[in-house]
Length: 343
Ligand code: PMP
Image 1 (cartoon, helix red, strand yellow):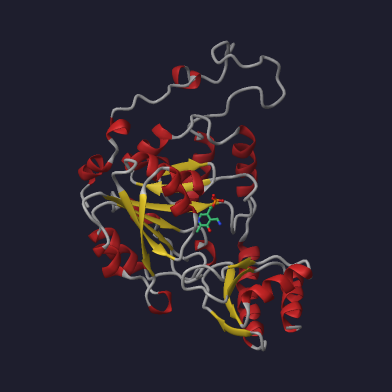
Image 2: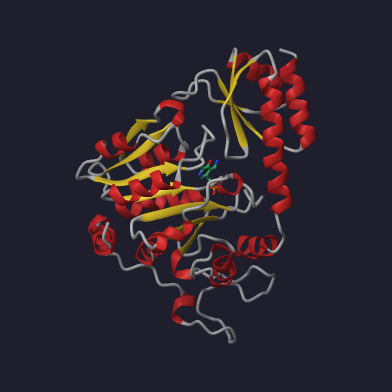
């Protein structure tokens, strides 16, 4: 897709928008007497508005992602970025999006909130990417295609070539949600946003990075898309505490934690396969396992009674009989395995 055609995808009201200009946009010096933002003058560490452009945090993230800051949008969780795709590109009741199913539930919830139809395309055999069906589902009003790799809740990652084939063939925005990419053996598509003007790669600090409570998600994309999303977001979408704490925590390495979770994933999968109640453990590139059991509702209730909470996916398309089990600490996994072994 050509860079200039991104403009043709944008909602008319957003193309016309004059975004809110903050006090900090008008004057950007560090020192001075700040009487411009109606803040409290009494210093307590948080009395000033946070940087709406998150410059310091982006400067820290940029070398980590190998992308210039102009390709980085920061959201209040990647959920904010998902919502912004609708608010920027999809005219309510007119446009639609295409998404794989089953996948992360917020694509359809954000679509419903924005009054935009979702054309769900079931995954192929063994949760494979239904490329032809996804392209066939699109029409002149399809603005975006939502893909998730590794996919939640199936756990599998799609081949890089297959994802890029869709990015090239699809006449709209292609969102590739990489929330679980740190646990995957398939490399990220992040660097590709410099080559494909219609690609948005979502990542998050909530999973491997261990900051779900701080709410920080990334949308990596070509600069025009980052500019559009930045125009539409709330000016102060990342609060001061989150900006500071994420920066502090990003300096701590997580390689050992990720390695341990990936190692445990293999151990837990093997042990689960040996249990009488388990019918199938699906391959996973994420920090969870999709597990088909004899009676999912009964197994779920049994685990709850033992104080172990997993996600019951029994009523999700193509996941009948399945629990989604997050990989925890070794002793937590052990407790879960022992409880399932009682069935
Ligand atoms: N994408 C996927 C695939 C997810 O599973 C989740 C959370 N479960 C998110 C995005 C949302 O992440 P965040 O915490 O960054 O909003």
